[in-house]
Amino acid sequence: MIDVTVAMHRNMVVWPGDPPFSEEFISDLAEGAHAAVRRLSFSTHTGTHLDAPSHFIHEGGGVDSVPLSSLMGPVTVIDTGNVESITGKDLERWMPQAVPSRILFKTRNSDRQIIDQPIFIEDFVALEESAAHWLIEHHVTTVGIDYFSIEPFHNPGYPVHHILLKNATAVIEGLRLIGVEPGVYRLVALPLRVQGLDGSPMRVILENFVKE
Image (cartoon, rainbow, N blue to C red):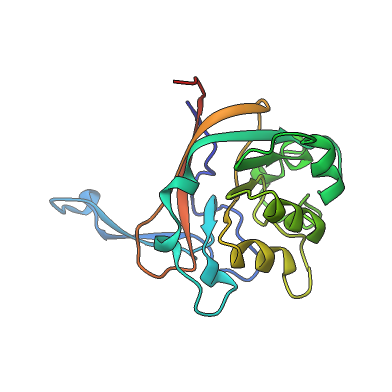
């Protein structure tokens, strides 16, 4: 099994403007408490996380509305090489025949290991609108990427998110795919089960896939 989840900690990178991850003791064994209890504080889009439709769609469903069938099952990791952004033509070239229903993109973000860097990197690889339309046209139910947004930084109107989320595509962001080989795996990606959230941190595991 391969854990492709970003570790959450006090010094982790978050989306610019989002609150930082923080923790504080409610009761501390070192101070004589009978049990240790901490309060955690973070945004719904911290680290490896799921975007719910309600993140961008008014009255869209929360994370609890995303079907587990989108978050568990065979998934294909595609190595995008050195492209600066992912277009519909790229997807047509990489998948000329069968198109998997769940896709994770391993981009040069992973080669640069920017997800481990202590500052936010703005020039990350993401999807262009043509790629989002292509994925919907080919009935892809789940898409993930190896930095904190499926969409380029400073993309006016966030069209990629709107295209995917209004079509009920599960969007997983902040995957740590460093060292993960392209191929087919079994995906387990589970958000917190909190009603109505626009997003949620999640634990994402890839398992070597063996057909049953």
